[in-house]
Amino acid sequence: MIQDNYRSEPFLRDKLYITVYESLKHRKTAPEDATGLTETIIASLLRGQHSVTLSASFIAQTTHTILLRFDKAAASQYAAFHLK
Image 1: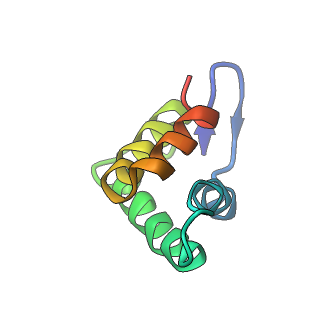
Image 2: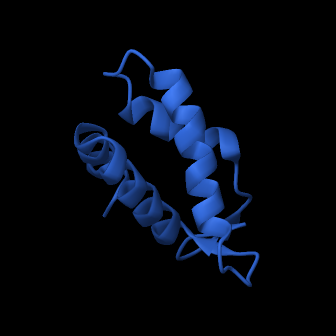
């Protein structure tokens, strides 16, 4: 479950995949990279979590951090649309 300031919504793996893929479109291996990174992000999000609710900002920051380690251009693209 994702919690924003005013509402909660279910976490959708495919939505995360699409945002990661969109950030990686400049790479020839974008679909494969997005699949692997999505799994890495989800594993990172779940590590140490005792609550079933994650904040949208926590998900965005975790995604950005992982993208930054993988591809700085993708991280910049992601940040432009998903970090406040």
